[in-house]
Image (cartoon, rainbow, N blue to C red; front, side, top):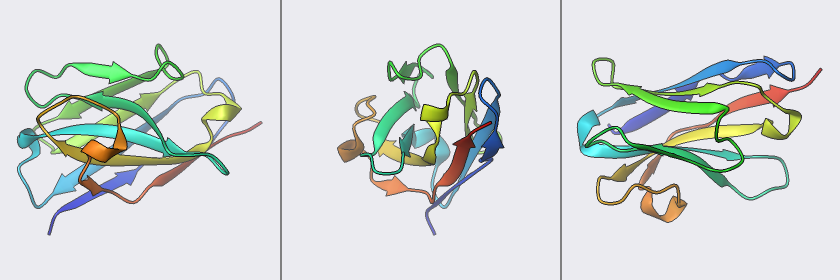
Length: 124
């Protein structure tokens, strides 16, 4: 069964950090690009970062650039998103997703499989 499972969310104070993980199974990890998305209450889903399967190149939305870092561990079939200098506006459900390794993008229409989200709450 093809699965992506995100974890690592929680409650953190402004300025704090978290590391989200996304463990994949049921398919070849190296054959896909991966992205992180988030959806805040009352807002549309937002693509925030993606990583290429071929060379590990990365892209970031302006809203998180310089604060979030996407990475992957091929030996663990796991995708990561390191969140730092968190702000209340980062409060959202965070999702990981896979896309065929054709184009590196964080537009949702390119992603064919999604994991269940993990909630990040930034509050004092």
